[in-house]
Image 1 (cartoon, helix red, strand yellow):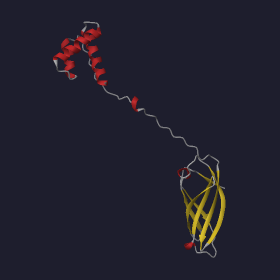
Image 2 (image 1 turned 180 degrees about the vertical axis):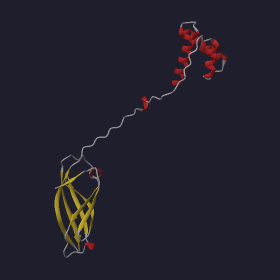
Image 3 (image 1 turned 90 degrees about the vertical axis):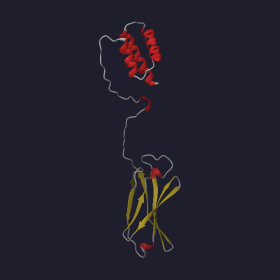
Length: 177
């Protein structure tokens, strides 16, 4: 009984002794029987061995294959009108345990990191608030006055620092839209 990892390609060689046959005229096949279906794989025949490049069975067999499952197999040779069966046996599925983990990245929750330079200034004035709005791209005096009036109402205060904080919040929220 041979062990077989269904996830890997595997070269498989059989040592043979041929008498009265010309290996150059012989065709070889390895047949694996799964659920009554024969899967055939071409073999290279020489005087001393028969070699089969067995592909990963997981890529060929359409159903789930379990650890320890056993498959019947046979080696066949056709030459000069003769059929020969030099080997019958079975394969047992042995798959080494393997686990690989990768962090799952949810694109909706990607957080970008920005460096922000914060300058704390004592005594914020209305001119500072207007300068901040201009820096953020609001050059229209009408729009500046509307934002300023809204910030005063939302801050519920006449303190320029509270108004500035409300204006900054307004621009931060509008950037997220």
